[in-house]
Amino acid sequence: MFVCGITAYDFSHLGHARTYIAFDNIVKFLRSRGYGVIYLQNVTDVDDKIIKRALENRISPLALAKKYEKEYVRDMGALGVDSVDILARASEFILAITEQIQTLLAKGFAYKIENDGYYFDISKFKEYGKLSRRTVEAANDAVSRVDESERKKNKGDFCLWKFVSVQKNTVKKFVIINGEPAWKTALGYGRPGWHIEDTAITESFFGPQYDIHGGAVDLKFPHHEAEIAQQEAASGKSPLARFWLHTGFLLVNGEKMSKSLGNFITVRDFFGKHKNFEPKNLLRLLIASHHYRSPVDFSENSVEQTKQTLAGINDFARKLAFAADNSTNPTMRQNQTVRRALKKAEQEFISALEDDFNTPEALGVLFQAMSAISPVVFSMPKNDADSALEFLRRTLGLLGIAPEISKIPKKMELLAQKRELYRRNKQFTHADDLRNRLRKLGYDIEDTPLGPIV
Image (cartoon, rainbow, N blue to C red):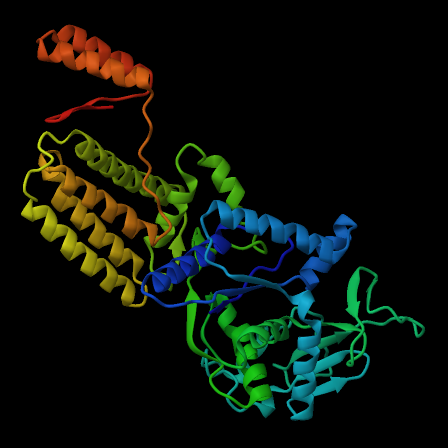
């Protein structure tokens, strides 16, 4: 499986997180079902945006890209996105890129514009637009992430290789001219276009065909169309990928979150703002509450609603753990309600994810199981409580969410036990005083048939 990665020129924002959490969930589930997924992701480290930012910061473009690649890896680690096997930098595949361009030239799918670069001729690839069902006439946004030439044969033609002017006596394999990186190749000094980077990388690892290609929905056209055209034209084999998966946008006030619009929130800013409320679980639950193909409407209201849902999950996990530790009859026969609810939920949860990775439906199944078990949670034997807690952790684990059972300080537990003694002795004034004291310290007590939970 290949998923289009970041262009490394700034910190990752929640729009990136929306895509990479969704694909992390997909890979985790496929692996849980026995599929040996090899997950490849690229890093675009050669790009106009990187060059521009590097010039502003007065550093090498590759150094800038390396910096933000490290920050991306750090942010994804904080989010629990740990399923990627290979992270491939475009700059390390220059030979593969130029070889693919030479193949396209030899087969008549590419042409040269003097003092400009090499371009793909979309008129020669008759199936161009088959993924997005876009026509060539609609290709106003056909871009290659490098300056486009007015001398192109067709409006939608895209750049494969951009020439960089160097002095005639230059012999170095790599140079930076006015902030622009250039490699010495059989095509001349220059740098790759955006689209060709990905197909050169995927062919290097997977060959000309593979199973799954993913990315955000805005990459479908022209980026993914260009990938199909390049690879299928070069290899003569179709399809490039058996399945195409595209994630919906993360929206802010109805608009796509993006750096160009200036409405983005970085992953680390989100973590800073919600550091006291499990930011990893919070964001992953918010993302999983929407189908991967659907847009996610991000707002303070949606975050607060997700906090309430997450608090409910944690509270349920806490009660199950308490029931398992304090069951008065650990050998009691298994409760049929619990057994049926867990079996049904397990089957339906898996079925939901098998149906185009329907995470909101899977969560709905989980919440139904919680509702069925909650009324009997304190009458369950230990084995039932353990089974239910393990089910909760296992299913949510497929979504990268780990229920948190807060560790209560021993002093608070002792105060709760003291209050319970007052309550049993009908010294309710003293019991209420202790409850109020605990509340002022930020703790609440819930009385249960098995004793108080703090």
